[in-house]
Length: 69
Image 1 (cartoon, rainbow, N blue to C red):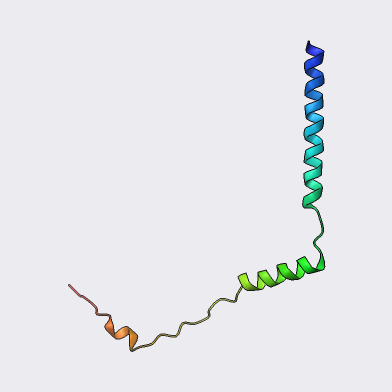
Image 2 (spheres, rainbow, N blue to C red; image 1 turned 90 degrees about the horizontal axis):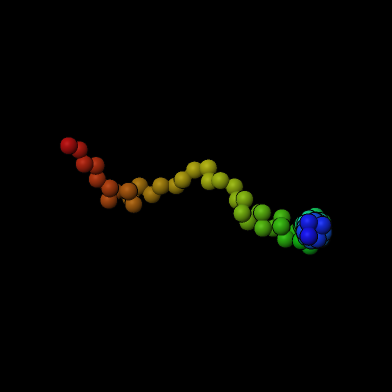
């Protein structure tokens, strides 16, 4: 019975190893030129340059009042 359990364990481990190797190969696929261009386009959309200054309308700020105690 012990040898049967070892055999089943060996088969399961082999099956698991094959699945892990197959999934790792799929993740290593080199993207095509079209996919690279699409990724670059999406990165440009996401990585917009930061705003260096803010324009404040002084007329819009007149509604603010300072409360002192």
